[in-house]
Image (cartoon, rainbow, N blue to C red; front, top):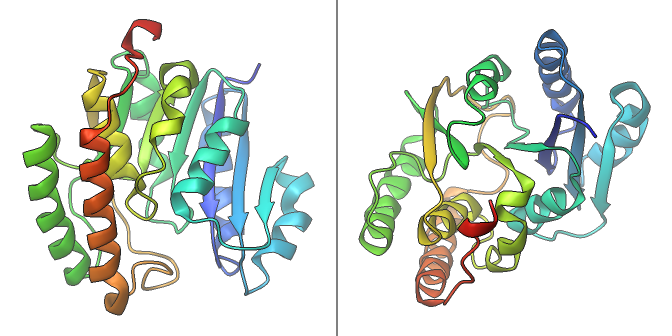
Length: 240
């Protein structure tokens, strides 16, 4: 069994995905751990799908591809289901997550049920940071937490910790990590936040959170958070 499986949701990242894989490959090999990439690509229109098929052998990729969009959250869930390693690391594939930060996560992998990145200086456009700040206010009201970055897409955990809870993680798609954090808090899973360097996207503005769609996306995910809060969950903490 591998030590680590790294889940990367991918959409229209042809220009940068190979570089992202190279960066992660370099850092993971330096740690002398066994790993594999699980790339969940969906409905790309820029040639990303074809490129990944060519990169499969050089990077020993596990490809989970769909011809149509399934949504960010479903892509992450499919990646988690596919993983078979002791630990799963989920990060975005746009270059904002710095692989150099992973060593801090790996050293502290047994310190909590869930390890989440804490962006020291978030390198996003102002409108995204504003909506995120407003959304966090709603999140704190619903889940009463001091977590500074519930939506950070740099997350390490053991699959067995959340395997039985995957059925509850469909309430939020684009805001998947808000829902993931809310789910963990509802189940009293311990969370450790680790400071990370947050970089600008290699491809400029986000492929998903366009300004003209941000309000509708936020509204849909607020409704998803409320549904998650109101849902009675199985207690998975005893099966960690």
